[in-house]
Image 1 (cartoon, rainbow, N blue to C red):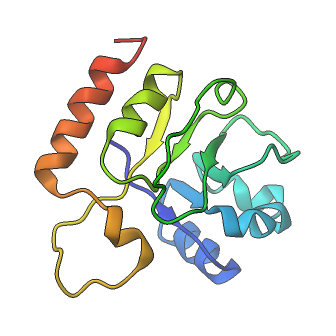
Image 2: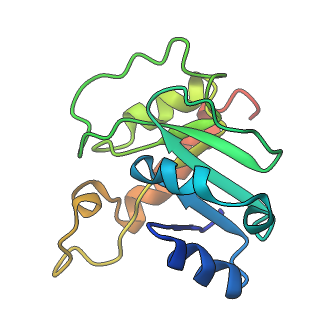
Length: 151
């Protein structure tokens, strides 16, 4: 499992680069930030993820993976995966449960971004309401591995 950080400012990008974090994610709302960065800045990261919900004309460097994103929090409707992959490499999930994520893997997603939490109390952010607890995360990983065409 890879762990990475989302950034929301140039200062955040600089911090991750200085700290030697190898992977970085630009949420849908930060595609403009991604586009504003120099090639030199981006070379500090071995893997870059960009969440989009439309097919942006992103310049492609080998280390950039695009994630299909629906910016509704949480996604409460059935997603039709037809034609999504291979336009995108993966799915930035804001779904309740794991069923739609497993279906994304079956449809060809190579990457699933899924939020998880260790503590359900005292956390007040939009992503927390659909974050998985450890036991559900384990089930999620097992089902995604079983659903993968590469399995």
